Image (cartoon, rainbow, N blue to C red; front, top):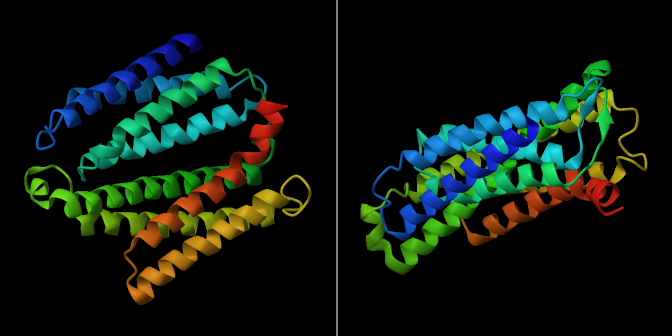
Length: 264
């Protein structure tokens, strides 16, 4: 069943991405495609079933890097699909769908196991949950930053075409990006605090690099939010700092585990 769910998820994600790309290539941005969203929703259901079968073992949970990455991808996909109903941000959906499909393939094709018993450590469950939601929220903020960059490019190159497109106003996307940054930064603060509370030593050899990189990312995100609040920053530099922030968090969450579980 696990292979069936994986195949269905990859197939439906791919179909949704292809249909959306065709929609954009044929300049039908003013229309709202329904079938890609339906396929993506089916993919999300199959993806969730795949994750349940892959992670929930007896006994324990397989929290391998590929499974955790696939779980984050599912959270991002679910959030983006929900946001489609309130904000026309479909331009980034093909990227999200392809990424989710690749994470499902990675979980299927790369036999990695990292068995945990998180039910025995409630504090660890809280820390992991907060960390995943913080990363997922900030990753979505990164996607909105890319959309801000794209809309800015369209405005400079051929602004008149935006009058008849489904692209939302730049200020609306920027506002959503900063709200997501605020929520993600708050979650990152709480997740770090939970780590210091529930984990024995956040600066031991196993966690030191994760802690340092996460704190650096947190400082950067606070700097971004302070600059926007106090000085009204809206520039390319903010996009670059957003990229640096998500890279730091990715290295913190997945860097050493990728080396240990996949390369070694």
